[in-house]
Image (cartoon, rainbow, N blue to C red; front, side, top):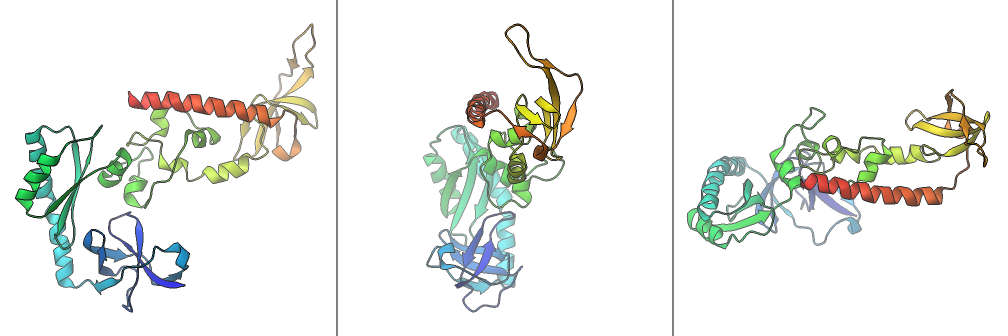
Length: 304
């Protein structure tokens, strides 16, 4: 077991492990650490704990010191300098007529490097821009292209739920989200209703997906034939959360001369009260094909 302290450098940012090196740090402590980018100012997210060696990337870098008043003043000054840096960089972008959208800027704690984040539809030749910026700021310049999800995380905003975006307020890392999750939860497959302000599928589709997957086990599909205590029936609707299956019973079976006849009344059953007849293999194959077609269609709509 190894003693570690989890440290975060940005609000809702990823947590990195560092060696506390006999320093008495606790949750909320502000510290100075050395990273691949140089000296950084971070906040301890939890008290010192022990983790398995396999869960860390050795060797762990040590916490250099607990931040003092001078360190905190330096960190605040770096934040205040961001507005001027953004303004100057935007002027240079317009001067060089580059097709890119400036999103954010970040100073390393020791002012050894300044990082500009931007989005663009393709690759951008910003070599001349870097030279201009280096002559103005007199430090190392890094321009980093990010995706639309990272843009939303940095900029923030209000989601369709009326609350601050999860990625900006608390979600440390993005997780894969698929259109199948929306289908399992019986949500509308309209891209405008299941996409966030970044234009990608909403992260919250992932939150309850495992529960839906568990509850969905044993639930028949709409149109599936099942056996009930009252006879054979056809599923016309199902409610996964309430474990209710709406069925129309078969009054007359299909023959060569006449079609199948269903009763007008609806009957409600629980999944443990019914027996499935149809094989799942063909249905699952068909559903997978449909999912791929829907996914391609939604991707095309999002590009427009």
